[in-house]
Length: 543
Image (cartoon, rainbow, N blue to C red; front, side, top):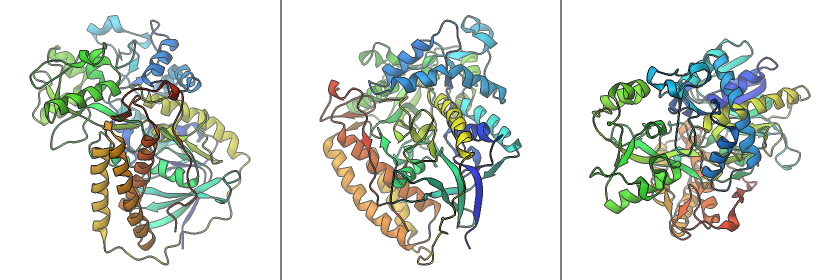
């Protein structure tokens, strides 16, 4: 018998976006927060740099808006950018009120002090120091402070090791009248699928960078929310814009350790193997150019020289300064045999952030009634063709607040659906071919890296599309025949988002922001302001 849970609000995802949303509505509603692993297993805990907001009297909102628009390559939506920037200070104050502890100024930083004596750093693309941080582990501090609050709230119930299978609709036949009424959820500990009924459902599942072989993201970044919303009938936009962080540590034991943008903000140089700097040949801002420019320059130089990595060097700065500002990175590098204070550190670009996603309005509402999307899973119009450094956590906070206000009004007039069917696995068996899942997973991530990476071509994209079509057929057959597992669900979602990435890239016949194609190397002014919007078919993987 299928277990059914009833909550006013179902939050799928337990990072900064999901936990913030839960706190915003919990005084008015019963809330379930789901995490497919531990609460802290998402990307928020891995965020190093900080949160961008106008906190210094020398800075202005207009400057933050302009910098974001410039980084977005002509595709940011002005109203969305202004909406987020305007609420930056309020969002930071809310975090501080909820226990977040940010780094204060040190003695030598007094000239950089802002109100409250918080230290601000400067990252690529920003005109001012406006990134508030907790040393070099801001995401971890944010996650810990929010977790303490949600665990203490009597109206919030936490479900770890619970992975969403699919969203539930009251009527899939009519996109205009259908509503999301909850979700089928796999308890990964016992393998049982449960029903979570909800008056409002919020997707806060993060991005899809695990579609690539090399990524700075945790294992769970498999595009689950984007794929589920697509199957439900939501539009997605700008999936061709996958941000590759320029500086991920190059080491066989750790393919996911990020070297924060703040290192370059505090004066680190990028160097070739012979020690020469090179970024000034690509952009007048050199190491402080936006991430798409820096990542492309590193990729270009690696291919030109035929080398496996380049180097990041901050050893010319004071040892005490480095250890104080970057304690986590310093200790991790030292453990792996690199001394940040004495030598350059080997780096490579890695898939880092999904700039596109499920289309929402400024209240985080999707195309389907009662379904919201917040955080990296969403396309709000903030990022455009490239995300400005440290705008991501800010987006999570602002849209969690906006969605929360809308949801509180919504649930007062909504009732629980009485038409949900129990999960049916009567015609499936336990798998005896798990190797199919692992093999397809590896194949997908390899060819996505080779064909749909930093530099693309039409031929590579078409080749990837054919491979994805074949894999999707195999996975569809496998999904219909065997009992589901978390690995199978992640693979199913990764194939879906990879398909969206490839077909979005094929539609953009220019190079802009994070999308660079050899067949269309120039930016096309006629495509200014034109998002790549995909509308879903009505044939999902279904049982």
